[in-house]
Length: 206
View 1 (cartoon, rainbow, N blue to C red):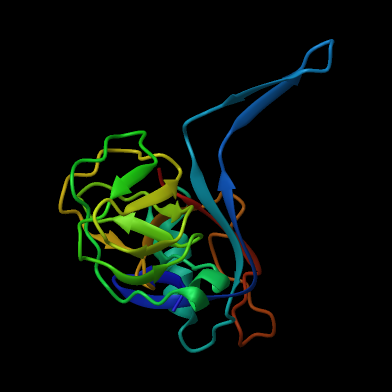
View 2 (cartoon, rainbow, N blue to C red):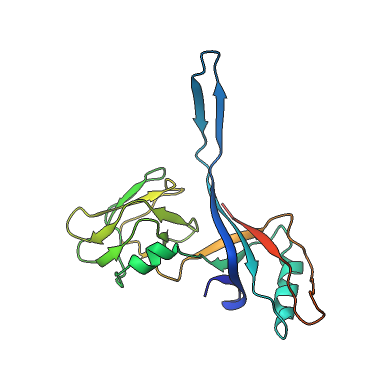
């Protein structure tokens, strides 16, 4: 279930409306001839704006989480997958990489025979190598793992990925995040029973 986790336990579910955005800084300027000059940074993070399911008997867990995490401590969420990609996915495999994919690469090679079925473009995934917490998105369909089959993704690799690394792409993609500074570090009750803090904003820790 997509939402906020604490110690591996779901304490708050994401509900609509929800938006997942890519923050990839780009600087643009127009010359006198109206040509556009564009400079794009390498840094990128995912940002989520969502409402949380109103809580009653279990509201204390989220309350403590909001207060103790504040704006400076990380926590874990289960990354919401694109609905179209989720419905199109047929792969139930556990693909792994072969060969090393270096930092700043946008492609990795899948080991032959480790994937069967479709992993659609627009799927969020992670590499399992230790210390690599970044979440990526596939930019092309992956249909199998015949020799030379690749996984194309965005953004470019934050750190290198060694051979034999598992690709995590199902409903188990955990993202390490911060609460943004406009999120209430406390509790808000709508009727004295249901705790509802309204829309919150969560940013990926990069």
